Image 1 (cartoon, rainbow, N blue to C red):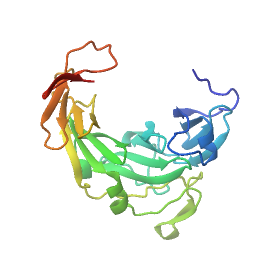
Image 2 (spheres, rainbow, N blue to C red):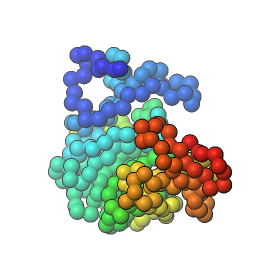
Image 3 (cartoon, rainbow, N blue to C red):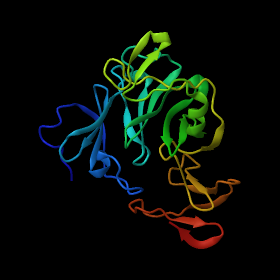
Length: 274
């Protein structure tokens, strides 16, 4: 379906996203007018490439001391997230990054694209979000934190940006830190992208529920409902509950696992919900 242009990719790619321009608004930048390849390289670069020619349209050097574990959308076609676990930090204390400790689970960088710009970067610590924290991801301005006891907690990323931002950093601009002790151009080699947020206390909890770590929690519908695997010991059991009141409104019907759609029986209707 797709092949990288020959001769233009002399870089080691750790993870990538192939995508086309979104249709929410007319294209306003060069990369919005053509298919793009968003790549994160093993040497610490984040780049937006022309998927047809391999031309680098925009780039930012993030860090040379972190090996990122994943590159994914936080908000489709608008925001991306880079995640790293503490065990993947190669060495400590460089260019605005605190030294690794057993308290830290991972470091997250959030970027907006079109044009490429930093939204926020922060460390996720066990002392703040709980000793059983297992993973975290950003989705539609909501930070979803999962725990080893199958608990999912939801926090507002906008609240975190407003109350936890301690440093203003823009890609391509000169930045002085620690009273001039560390300085450089944000997003350039030798300086990279520092952490701009310091989360000392757990943010206000928006929502919490339990579900199997393998399935997570899905939201939708009107009025709003959420779907979760309420009994982790039984992976085929899914419940749909009202977001307000959390009462049961449907459950999964037994159907072939090969089907792309899952049928649910509704309590107040004989018709299944797909």
